[in-house]
Amino acid sequence: MKNKILIFDTTLRDGEQALIASLSVDQKLRIARQLARLNVDIIEAGFPVSSPGDFESVSTIAREIEGPIICGLARAIEKDILTCAKALKGAKRPRIHTFIGTSAIHTEKKLRKSEEDIIEMVKTHVRLARRNCDDVEFSAEDAGRTGVDFLCRIVEQAIEAGASTINIPDTVGYTTPEHFAGIIDQLFNRVPNIDKAVLSVHCHNDLGMATANSLTAVSHGVRQIECTVNGIGERAGNAALEEIVMALKVRQDLFHVQTDVNTKEIMRTSKLIREICNMPVQPNKAIVGSNAFSHSSGIHQDGVLKAKKTYEIMTPQSVGLKENRMNLTGRSGSHMVRSRLLDLGYSEKEIENSQFYDKFKELADKKGRVYDDDLIALMESKSSDDLKDVFTLEYLNVASGKSTVPTATARILVDGKLFQEAACGDGAVDAATKAIDRIVGYKLTIEKYHLEAVTEGREAQGRVSIVARSAEGVFTGNGTSTDIVEASAIAYMDIVNKIARMKKFNRKLPVPPRESL
Image (tube, rainbow, N blue to C red; front, side, top):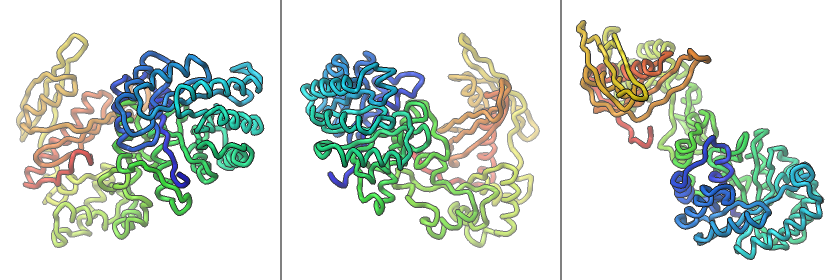
């Protein structure tokens, strides 16, 4: 136990508090199952007294999830604790987590209690929780702003009353690593029975130091960290589970501890949370952001090609990714372009690097990012005519509404001739793509669809990116317009024309497995 850090996941409790709408029981159960696969030590499943739905969620997870300890939150109030105990009844390894505010602003303004009143409430309700559950955790809410003398007294009494885990929350993200380390040191040095409990921390990210504070606490003897997947949570969020776990793994030389988390499940868990909670992750987010293992600089790409550790301190495979990603842009060097062409099956003799690289740079400056299908088109083209679009969208009309079956009519120019088709769909975009399909005759499966605003205001331009799979490979298309359906049609036509060129060149792209897209 001395060298193991317990990972207490509160995505389903503190993380959910950041969402616009509560999660359903089924959604919470899906997340809990994945957290069990991730092999966290404790799952805080919810706050049972807060609503019938939360009670049902905690109760369902307690019955159905095996492996981790299943924890429920309760204020230092009798009704909360008894309700929590009832919700956890089906768990093989239940834990009641009770808390009370201890900082002056909480005791005086919110609770309107004296320090002695707070201590009595802690003793009474920790004992009550202990009578109803063998595993009790106590949290001193806003410990980061609590006077250290009072905090030491509270912790001592909570342990005496039966708490086997003591949590020190930086509830509003107020502390700095040095300040937080001082609080932890005081507790270890001044609380006489501190050795009878596991010391835990729960850090928020209001000043961007949640992970740093949590890791500092580990260096000073803490053996449980409370965190959330993707760092979601109240206000600026919580300490991010993936950052904590990978920092402890990568820097074992510094921390000399380990967790039992299956790090290869990190990316899968992150993506599930994004999907269910509808909370995207910024591209530069540590560990799980789309750019976390992405290299665009020519210097970086050259280094990674020669030795991955030059610019990667952990492997993408260690968090569940298939591989890193080399973005081909105007910043990419000729060595990276050559390497990608070799991966696509071209021989050294086929690659006239100096001549090809000039064409690549011209295209990269024009498009921003160059994909595999673009590289093949450049390699196979004999003249600029080979790169022209085969299909041109001349006309698109879409009708949709609440009481209307979405329909679309598309008119496409092919070799100087106009072809027109109409189709119905599940929505305006689906109808438009089906109408296009009827004209071009390709069988496409859309695997990713992403929409983002590129300008502001009511007339904002929308950029649509589509990833679609066909017999010729996996293609990416992009389109921009003030009309979302039009932008989608443009992106789809981009893919259609790439496939047409691929057919013309009689080439196929290497097709990655679906999970790596």
